[in-house]
Amino acid sequence: MKATGMVRRVDSLGRIVIPKEIRKVLKIKENEQVEINVEGDEIILNRYSDLDDLDLYLKKLIDIISDIYKIDILITNLNKFKLTTKNYLYLENKELSPYLSNILNNRNDVIEKNKISISLNSNEADIESSYLIKTLIVNGDTVGLIIFLSEDIESVDSGLIELVNKYLEKELE
Image (cartoon, rainbow, N blue to C red; front, top):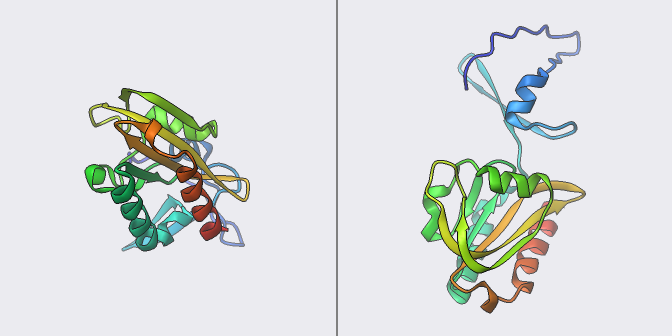
């Protein structure tokens, strides 16, 4: 990220206000959790995702479902791809496309039964697929997206995405 040149004072309680411009760029909303890291003499702020703690178990689950149902599964946090099945490993830790960010921000669920072009990441070519997209909401907060991609999404039981959704809700409560 480009340096902003903004200067802020630390108050008597050690608080610093993150300028609105920076919150907007990082898509940090009011009451959202922020992860604070230190590297050398730098403080690094990142949007926090509870999904970060579930990597190992969640990876096993989506790999099993993918093998059985012959679908690709992508799990996102609020701004990046968190976990993917083997065909989409190249997307892990890459930013969501504006299309997916819009679905996330509007808390939409989408089903596209016909094979059409979908943008997953702005830096990658669009893919042709049918798909199911479910917005993951935990305790009223948007957490990420669950995306199922398949040549024939109609052959996939729509209850399957609900199963993954409920599993994640329970783990993240």
